Amino acid sequence: MRLFTGSYRAEDTVFLLKPMAMEMVDVAAKERLIQSGQRHYSELLTLEQVPNPRYLALFEALTARYARRLAAEIMARIMEQAFYDLDAPVARVCGEEVPIPYAKHLEDAALPQMPKIVAAARQVCGMA
Image (cartoon, rainbow, N blue to C red; front, side, top):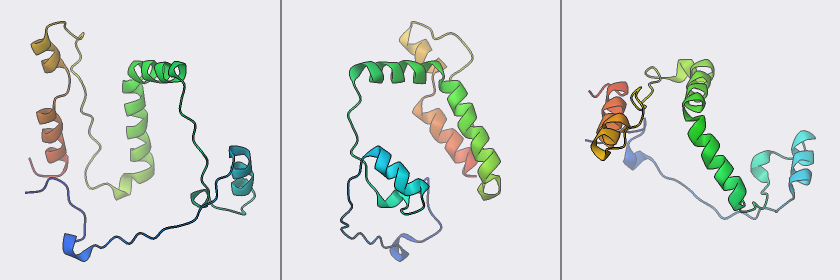
């Protein structure tokens, strides 16, 4: 049994990929073209820079610090903007409301583990 499926049978689905030549533009030119309506954002590529170590450290620290708030915001936006497209309510799978213990077996009990995540997904999909 597969956990997640789409609305089409696998044998009815074919993905077609074709090579495309897309121009690289700088961010300012990209924004100007999009804002003026001359181009769609999906038609333009911007060369991405590798983040520096300081930025990555800050990103990781803030993501860890505000993970619950971020999850709540994402859930709220899904409920506000896609409510009628949902087949089930949005569910949160998160750690227990306890300080993270030092002992490994207690840490595992406090943090979401794969069986808990799979059980929540099965429940939302009506497969519990």
